[in-house]
Length: 251
Image 1 (spheres, rainbow, N blue to C red):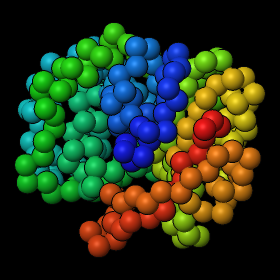
Image 2 (image 1 turned 90 degrees about the horizontal axis):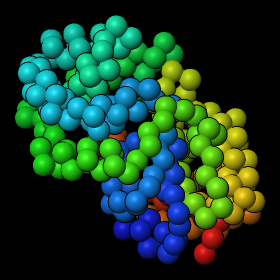
Image 3 (image 1 turned 120 degrees about the horizontal axis):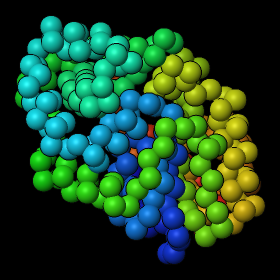
């Protein structure tokens, strides 16, 4: 979605905020001088923190783990609370790169439950890129494990929000990045949050699925529909072009 997001960025802003960090594609493309990144997924934020502090250790240790289904299941069964922060980060990277479709999903107990993806030759990292991202995170980014509501930008700042998408059908919808999920009440709470940001002079841009629920939630803001391709699906032929929304409180 970068080709759609970049032209819609405000020309000027102070601090960049991102409360649903995911892969940080927009942040790492923009390279703002100061950014605050948050997410409620503890394993994701721990990975970024360790990638910033110990990139060489992560790269070395992840390459020592065998790419086999037996090893995958053993690593998946580990309890992160019994691991060091570095071990948790290495586990996160290994599972993300060897599981089915690179999907991160947990059950109600917070246990990672995506099956082995049978990758023939997984690319865990590109060394120079990994080092550059590490240096950028150290010098310019504050990382926080938190709910989106804990981020407090002020007038003149900018926030990009990419929450778990609203389901497009009654039987579809993936939101299990954390044990608590992300439901209708959370989407409504998020809408109320960005309404307050708007009142406080914070510019924001939000991505979500093009469904009546989302359009109604944000009907008082600028809504644009764009076509994009879904990259995660059980079958390749299901990764079709769909309509998604880019919503902003500025032109």
